[in-house]
Image (cartoon, rainbow, N blue to C red):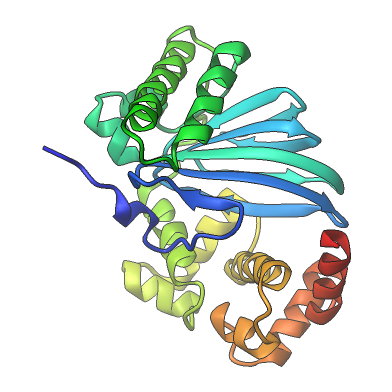
Length: 285
């Protein structure tokens, strides 16, 4: 029986540095950027396993009540359903990111080893050998390349499981409620809609006070603060990589008008959307 995993990526769009392989199993991103300002990816989770290989620069990953500083030549694995946030400083960074769907790991009976866990890769030579072949062959249709891709993807997964079995993991210290994870997932899928604390609470059958408490307890911020941070991060991505009008980006990020986007964008980043776009274009050129 052939299993397909398109549904795990159904809300993702392919861009110049982020593509799905022809078999629609994994997603790979090779990001090279000279950042003029720090990047903060707010606390979130997803079902796929996220592998971040830092070729140049550095990043900081916050997961499972631990902080991981990942520098040049290091790699971190963020397990399925792990609540995490990522910080990237200013300056040049080159980060390779591979997403492996939970469905693929489940099919090969190893999801339990890579769920709700975060760890650094120790055997970097073996890891890089497999990742290099995966990245080179995931877009090719030739039979030999296709076989190379599938073989080395399985080898990479086996390496992750082996590193786990050696006890190099940091297991989750907090049992994040499945309800709160569902709330975060719902927000990430529907951030472009008219979301409110009352509406979210009603959707999940809780009082607004209870949902507000979950955000304060787990994320140390308000629901609205989290939502605006997420929307602004989405807007930053669109501003730097598309030529869409500000008003269209505002609507696409869930704001009722461009003034709401401008107000929240400047409050969080210190820039207006237009100024941010100009700076991003300067860096690219």
